[in-house]
Length: 397
Image 1: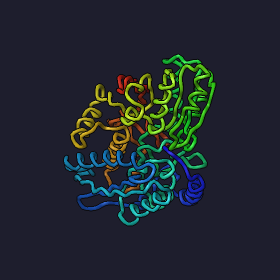
Image 2: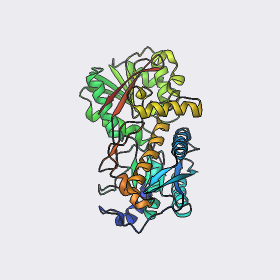
Image 3: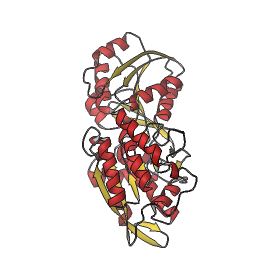
């Protein structure tokens, strides 16, 4: 997701590189980390509940809370020969890197959580890494998509950093292949959000994978409202499709203004568009021939029993359809639960070790394994929208 304040991230990375060397070996020291005793286990949430990413963070909070509620209703997590209920500890990092680092210190050193869900953004997640490493406590981000998020500068994996979402490279490549093979596009224009590494990273991956010609690359920034000049420039190129790597707030307006300007070619996007608000902003009659990559689809319940149950339960709990970011947070909790059960321990170091070994775990966003870079291996979905409704979802391995 969004990365800004690059100087802060660079400083965090420098601090991180000093503190992580002890955790880089294949085996973790088992004398470190937090461990719960008694009948409960603390799981933290370091999340953006206010600030620029607050909309996404609150959706993730809903998914997190639903997972905790359901697990506890069934007696808790099986830890060896006993069950332990989850005590959730949720903290708002306020969509800031300083807040994320502070919340991580609070959760790990004072609250003594065994694992953390979040942060949502790569920027805030990167700022949390030094304190995660210092405490030897793993985190699973629902939505930090930068390819390097889980990696150190030397290319080795961050031992305590995991994610439930796809990275930008996979999304950009998949969108390019879809443009090539399904839409049969020969000429594509790109409208990228250059205020975040999310948008620029996706655009870069798309450009590298697309076999046709990129005839125009235009840029916008978070918060922009008027895209007519950019759309006019694209319209003159007679393109076959437009790639818009960004978030629903701006993508919805781009779709609306493009259709009003008579640009009716397919518009392809990323998981930042995977939200019901996209069609609300664009207008249902304008939201035609829209395609985007996402780890979760409202159509998933047709083939995935875990997704079907989740969508039903989410609707009953919150009186609305489940958004993608709630599904990813729900799965982040499932990953931690699976790791605790596999490790037969609440020790945070052992949980991190088990997270790295997850294989074929049933999940809302598809059967999940964790690869050597702590990225999930699962199908990626391309949703298509007509008249503001998702009409189809194609799973791509």
